[in-house]
Length: 574
Image 1: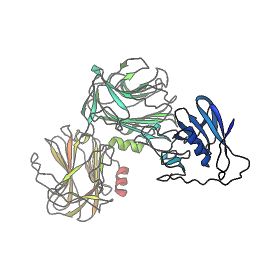
Image 2 (image 1 turned 180 degrees about the horizontal axis):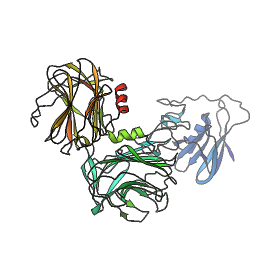
Image 3 (image 1 turned 90 degrees about the horizontal axis):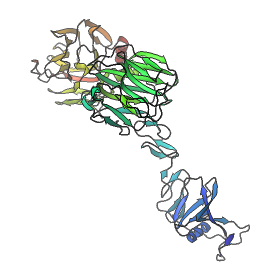
């Protein structure tokens, strides 16, 4: 029944209806909650224009309902009562003018109900309506930065950060991914060894001891496109079905993901839905694997060292629900035991929830390092491996490079250095070194690029006293040498040094092939250091301090031989 409240004659008459053992619920997300007695809440409702009803709970808390909500529901409850305002048909007295204030002011169209209590719209929350609301809420450490907008953490995407975008396991003395959200748990104590990028470590697995890694939580790849990339280094001849990565819900078609070796070649399987590579995977050598599933075209792709091996239509997409990923072994369904263990090293394992294109894959597999010498990141690697450099002796970043900034060697002893380069120190591994340089002064022979390890060293690119370019390579018995053109002081020039067992050593100058020589490439098969600008008094090889006085820019080192199209592109678009 309605109840009546007596008001002084100068206040308009208002009626309050009450229903006991009932509570009002709303679909709105910003109902104000007040810790106060029911009587005080009723007074607030009467004296405030935008409160149309309240629910009084037995714990001396009131819920205030405004006219912003679109729908209300009355439910039975023994813990509360519902009170609502009945507007009389005629108003005979003037309205009371009440003044309330909130400090600071209510934000984002919020209403100040009484002192420092704001009633927010459905899109905002917080004491002063300063916190945006995202519905559904942002997941995976995403931040709600404005109503309905989530800013996602590294590796995640989607309207509420629910889709994994990028996951990287570097295996730098940890089994967890780079973001710390996908946790690797070692099975039978896997260890670490030197990695592909020289400065970090790789995962070392011994299949004889049944070592592998189980990843938590579940990574959802079902009914999605994806790209997996990783480096492997088998240390033994691998038996059939040796597994690199698996996610098996059941041993049924399209319910089990497997990346493994079969007949010495890579196999990409959804279980009875397979595609196989064409090349035998070598032992005791690093190989870069890329495996792609494209949901749109329903095709699987296998790349080896950046080159497409095989593409084939799939019978269907993956459907491996709620089962953990394994690295270096497989588990065939729930309750099964682990088997098909890998023996060797795995490094830089990268997952993307999209299809990478051929150019991206080739760069990921073969662009060892790329240095732009920008003023705010002079030593940082802009390539996929984060092989940052070091410098000394007065080397500095200057504003006048071929593109943006460059590195300059103004004083005797100045240099830039890249250390622990694994593939460059591997015999007969193809390579390309591309750079721009400008001579500031020239009085004697100077070193532009110099290769060394603890035993062996080689002047890769040298500038002779008269400005002639010279490149060389060691074949195990002697240095094979190519003499290039004379380079003049004060102009930028582009040079590319390439090697492959097919074409030998080649010198390209300003986009054109200058000369080549058939040769092999012999090293100690250990990581090497590449130094620019100076040979740094290498007494092991009897070289003096051959300082280059000039600037270098846009240094790119590849673990493949660049072709003519690549070289023209680098020259015309540095």
